Image (cartoon, rainbow, N blue to C red; front, side, top):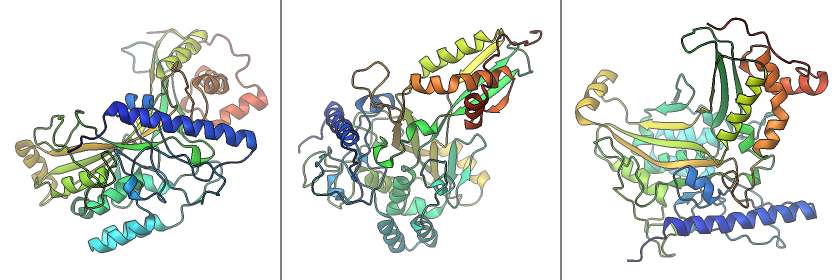
Length: 422
C-alpha cells in the first residue's frame, strides 16, 4: 500500500497553490477583472501556527474525488470563462452543496436534520455595512451559546446518529469565521477591584476581504502522527486511531471506497463509537496575526498617556468552538456521574483555519487577507488612545474612527489625570 503524502509535501503543495492565487490576484488588479472561480487557501505558515499541515479548499463545483486532508470552507456559484487561467489546486475535497445536505438529511429520516438542512437552504440575509456572511450559522437550531461567547453546543440526536448530517453541518460551520478580539484593561494595582479602563476591538474584518473569492480560510483534519483528541476514553491526546482514505485517484486524494473524505471518515467513526458519552468538537482558529507586535504598540500608547497602573492586553477569540454531544439518556445528573467513572470520548480532529496572512510576520512572500498589522494600527491608534484616555468600558468602533477623522477627537489629549494609585 502506498503511504499518504507527508505533512511537508502537503505544505509545499499548499504554498505552490497560494503563490498561484497571489499572482492571479495581481493580474486581475492590473487588467481590471476578477476571476469568478476563487479558491480558499492558507499558507504553510498558517497551518504551522494552527498546529496543522495545510492544503487549500475546493469549490463545490469540484468533484469530491479531489479530496485530501483539507475540506473546502467556502462555496462559489460562478462559472469560469474560457479565457480564465486554470489554477489547478492541490488535492482536497469540496463541501456538500445545500441540495446535497437536504438530500442526505432526508435519507437519514431525521426531522431535525431535514429542518436544519431546509433552514440552511434559505437565502442568507445581507446586512449593509457588515461582512457578507450567513450570520444564522452562529446560532443554529438546537444549539446553545456559552456565557463567554466562545462555544455553541448541542445534544441534538441526529448529529450523533447520522454521519452525513454531522459532516454536512461541520462543512457549513466552516464557512463563517471566529471573532478575534483585542481586550485592553487597566487597573490601579494587582489587588485593586477598581477598573480604570477596559476596551475591546473587533478584528474579524481583518479575516474577510471585500471580495469573498479572496478569502484564505481552509479546513484541516488531524494529520498522521499528530497528537489530538481522537476519541480515547482516557481523555488524553493520542496519535491513534487514524482514518485511512485510499482512493482510486491516488494516494492523498482524500477519497475512500465509499466516496467520502476524511471529514466523513471521522464523522463515521464518531457515530459508530459505542461509548455512551462522546463529544465531537469543531474549532475555528486565527493564524499568522502578529500579536506580540500589536501588544507592544498598545502598551507604548497606554504609557504615553501617563498611566502607571497594571495593563493587560489579551487576544481572546469568540465563536471559536462547535461542540456536539450525545443526548442525555436519563438526565444531566446521570451523565455527569457516568462521565466520572467511564470517561468521555472526545473527538477534536477537524479545524477551520482563518489566516490573517499567508505567512508569519517577517517571512518572505507574506500577503495579508485584508491589511497588515502596521496599516491597521495607523488607522486605529488615535481612536484607541481616545477611548483609553476617556476611561471607557466598552468597544472601540467605527464611530470612534469617524470622530477622529471628522472632529479630530483625541488629537490634543496628552497626559491624563489618572488619580491616585492604590
